[in-house]
Length: 334
Image: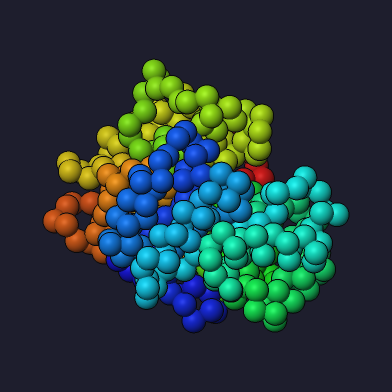
């Protein structure tokens, strides 16, 4: 498993990390036993980055991670949490007092005095562009409540605004074969500034898992049921904003271009991680099999495993499918 520099923090994190939204049970029920098994399988395979948020299961994801890491002294895992969605996402709610309250709650959930990395959780553009936002975050660093901070964003313009800030450690953005706009300006800007990029929703909410068909259904409490058109939060968070049927067709084309023995999710994760400027890819996993499959993508990235997978050849197919079938359907801000 490759370990890469986390911005200017002096830390390193794995090229394949673990997103833990699903451990909060927002993708259907996940038992504590299954969640702990996913965390263990990931760490045992070299994963050193867990991404979570204070609203995933109203803190359940953070608490599960905290209990797991407490039993693994010297674990070497960086926990990146997020804050800012516990109240209405209005600029006036992003105050130093609320930042303090949110981070204090996450510290309790995770069982730590200092949070490794806190990211603003897709806040309004006005918050990302405000000097006061970074003054408040700098104060939390100075007080020892957090070690570093970053921003999770919805749009490329927001990403570029965050990257321009001198103390931003990372930007988290949706990036996958269905969402290529970050290649144009965001990844080059991040690489030049020494800002880490976390690629989230890398498998397009499972569309790029290769497991779904037109007959696939999801639980009522799964956002892939209740947020397909942005009913609960930004539509881009669900299937990367791509129509389910169009996404299935595009995923089928990508899978057909792969050599025998190489799965679509492994190829996708390896392709994302191979892009200049990407620090870590953070797929989710609801069971040990998915966690193992995600981590196994590191072998493709390293050119190991005896497969005929060629990142450059897959890159050509990704761009062809995107330009022909998806570009026109993607919101221009993404």
